[in-house]
Image (cartoon, rainbow, N blue to C red; front, side, top):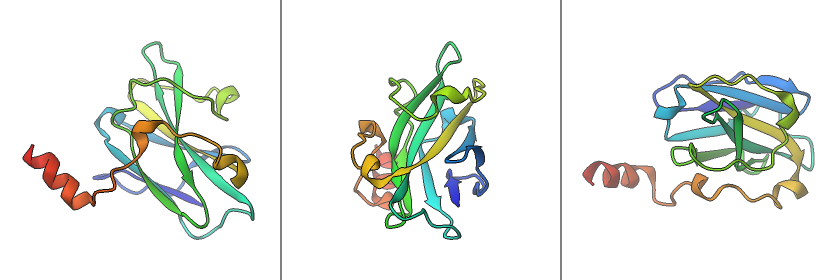
Length: 147
């Protein structure tokens, strides 16, 4: 149903299902990741009126999971690019993965997708730094490289 892509790595197309409506992808060596793409594979659409909240989770200094809302994907918006490089020191937010106690290791972060009602998705506020620039990626790479 979902895929996850980090530049320079193989596509992950088989998330771990941790509940009926929750999925996670592991991101090894997450300190070296700037952006992550989350997308629907096109094989199974969301049920009518549903979509997926996308979260980034990383272990804090004490090893506790810190979850941050990045945004969402829906049948009408089946993919999204999120910037995670500035989030690794931010505060956590309310999330639906709390009671799951997913294993955390110091070098592995996770992308979590929670299937929820569309009306709930539009009321959520993603962490500000996750928004990807509206400048096309080629221009952004050139600006970053030349600075």
